[in-house]
Length: 189
Image (cartoon, rainbow, N blue to C red; front, side, top):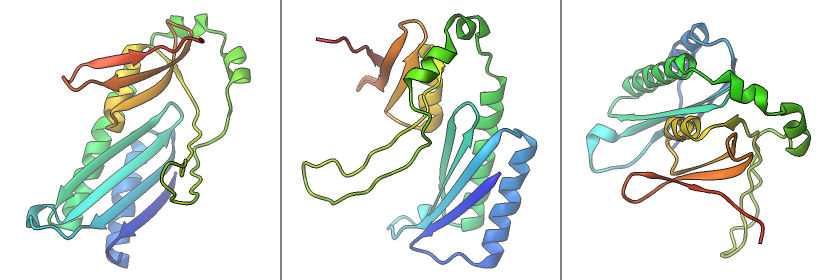
């Protein structure tokens, strides 16, 4: 597993780096299919002293991306909280049953030929208003809407792009203002 550690508005000393690495490497025992891990820690000037440090931990597995975020007044406590939360998410992600008959019904070879195999990368351009300043490319896993809801909740996003097995096309899952979910199913005009 490749671990990237980044900090914002704080200096990362050797002791804290070693502590983060020690806690994160324990997750290798839970799931050996973790391909990349990114740990970000930032200190934010805030009037509330109980949320001084924020830790965000993102991992890429062979089947998707998981992210956990925690806040606390102490940096070591943030590391403990966020790695424990990630361990729970990995276990839940692993225990989830995938309906293999749906996956076999879809010709994955044909879908792979139609979709890009590029990894996630960011392209930052100028910060002009009204211009596209960031572009992301990602692998799309075929899944049903229930799996998409779970994946979106694991990521903590308000929307999620996925290849819908039932519809046989790309869809966008989103969280509505009332807390329910909606699915956008595009049709050519």
